[in-house]
Length: 288
Image (cartoon, rainbow, N blue to C red; front, side, top):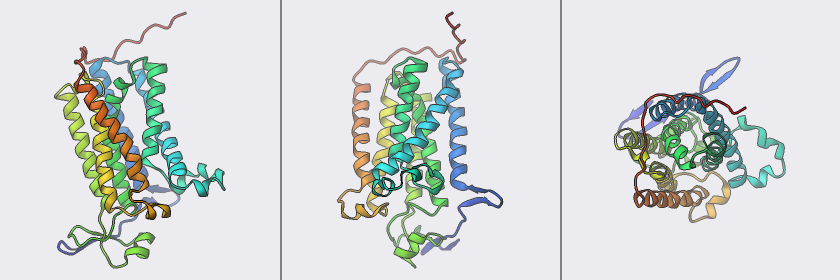
């Protein structure tokens, strides 16, 4: 509900799409939609380059497992290890919340290395340059899911687009009566813009002919906005209150530096030639 475009927006939206005999969260729906659309985008890319169709399902499995396991363990080890080390079985209780995007990134990277070595048998940069395009879209959808959950918002603000998250216990405890930065929307906008840029780079500029370029731009486009937006975002855990840069910012720095290094590497090496048959490759016969 918008009380006034010059005052604030009251955000009083249920986190549940359906809350009956089963519960369906908007967050889960965003995750699912992201993977469905991402799969279709990846299928078009694979077909465009003549990669085997069977690789898609294998890459999807590695990506999903890497995302969920990595994001969960990232939250456990980066943010709340003191709690989980005393109750390790609760690490499995993913439905109670607690996922970290940096951990998810590391998990996906491990999955991509496994896919590249065991299935594609190609340089992992080939996979990264193609996979990160839909991942940028998924990142934006997940931030919209965070908005529906009334979580991960920012400090108080008097800007006209400030949100009052009336369903959030954290908001009531810290900012009762004050509007806050909708940092979920800030990040979502950055990630959707990045997705559009990466699609343009691939389909219009053949950036995939410079291995590592799309991957490097992705890292910069994801983690530089994350680093900057963290300055106006609430701390996720108590120990961050004593830090000049919070945990999310410290974890973002290595990825930004890797992104810059990848872009420099890609732009200082010659383009590679890629044939684009625009059809899935025939499966190679298995050796007997």
